[in-house]
Image: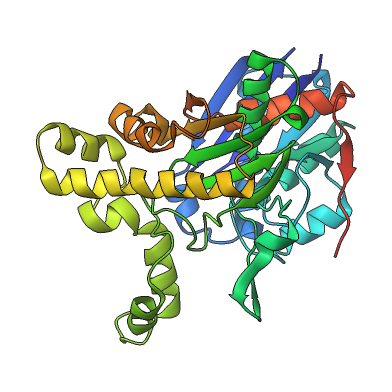
Length: 356
């Protein structure tokens, strides 16, 4: 089994971890405060984050030479099949130039590559957010210049699929699954024999509303809002993705707080919170039609899966479709380690990234 150093950069922190034989032996979360507020782009953040990581390694007396590989969270690239990719020059160029957009996860592969190169190791990413395995039918939007695209939570969805398969036996290629990742954003994927053939775009306004995002909105009302003069384009995009959903209704994205209101008898909170569960259930029902009713299991995961009231509302509406399994939370470090560990053991292929 491999010894892996994992790097997961987020907007407000960088999480690192070491896995030996699949077990977490070290983890640290580097919080970013005022040191990152004035650093708005990848070029300025990269050296700061890299130094912070190297300082922690030195402080903890961790020898990178003892690692088998360095693994980074994958960023915004062109659409890819799911799986493990070795970081190469083409990938570095696309992430560093932000050719497909800027996100803090773009730093993951670059940080992994920079540290790996210093120690004559290889760097990898796994299941970045732009994994695209959609079937052709799923790409048609209803407007000739717009195509549906795949942006969701493949890292956690595919990790949960592997976990389910370990429990039941077999591999993801043996099952048809519906997996709902329910966190700050919500994505519901139809997994046919290991491939996500349909999924809502959880970032750009598709599917259920969530703690922070609006999901799909009535088009004419949205068009009126666009031309109301109340928002610039960037302000409206930020509002729909970061200030929508529960945040729009309650001023908080903390579902636990909303659930407490429900338990205290707040009828408005109950209506909105149950409506979010209702929309998730509808999306799962739609995914069942994608799989023509041939569904082996439905898996609920993400932070919202800790909410018993919320999960019970969903199961009450979808339980007739297939057995439901709940896997609360998400662990991106472990998901990255598992995926790359499987690939290094020869059980999954290591893919090559090529420019489009």
